[in-house]
Length: 360
Image 1 (cartoon, rainbow, N blue to C red):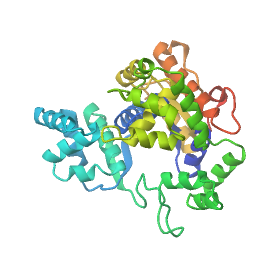
Image 2 (image 1 turned 30 degrees about the horizontal axis):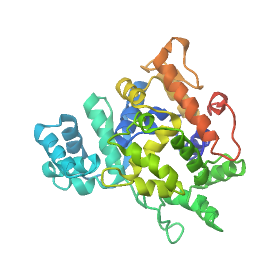
Image 3 (image 1 turned 45 degrees about the horizontal axis):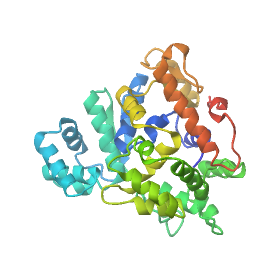
Image 4 (image 1 turned 90 degrees about the vertical axis):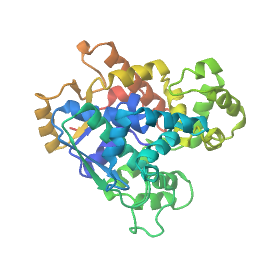
């Protein structure tokens, strides 16, 4: 919803010392690929010793689940195939297969943050990174909970609820959303809104997506990252029928295709991320460590990273000339995604990625 500069300012204002970017090649993907790249970047700094994250159920043996996913025994794979043959989505089939071996896992995996935690731990243990996992209990609303607290201050609202309130257009709801945020973040969001620097118009997003769908055919859609099993035909048909993005997604959702997956398809279509490019990014991982912001403590960390980082550390939206074609492609995708995001705002800035200056 907001640009990366505002997000970095929010993070620093609310206690972060150093803000690093997760490239869109990974941040637009599912929890597993998101987590893999995030952990890889932290490991590449050479200075991170602990990775802390929220979980709905931090007491559950998440490491056992992560190890099962890393090992993938024959019994486990057979169970997944059995559930897939019943028409389950991959996420559902995997969860049910895990539950056969680790009772209680299926209910545990219903927590969005539990799932992300498993992905973090899986990467840490699979790569044998020298970082300790430090889970903490998530409190307040669930990740996808669209209901705001009845009384302000009685609970932490989810980002989903805050976005829904902020973009509803109903009288007083925007201020209600701001009241549910930390004061520092609310002030920055209010400022961004006043400058027309928020991509909150669902109708504008739907028009952009519908344009891409209408100029595509089934063959070209089938090459979009993660697209599979003929869904492209349904999406093309619905491009003519759906009156809004929400209606389009609702019509696409099924047992095999959950909402998050459909939304990722749409994002990948807009930014032009193909199967081929996505597989390359997954295989090779992040090409650089990009700094978005730092305070005095963060700058000390950056100085330490000069002697420890295993990837180039950059602060602008360009890569060193000797970084190679792969790093340039990753950065070009970042520029493209930002330009598309800009077109969804009231006040777009041309070449915004190239103009971005880190908060140092």
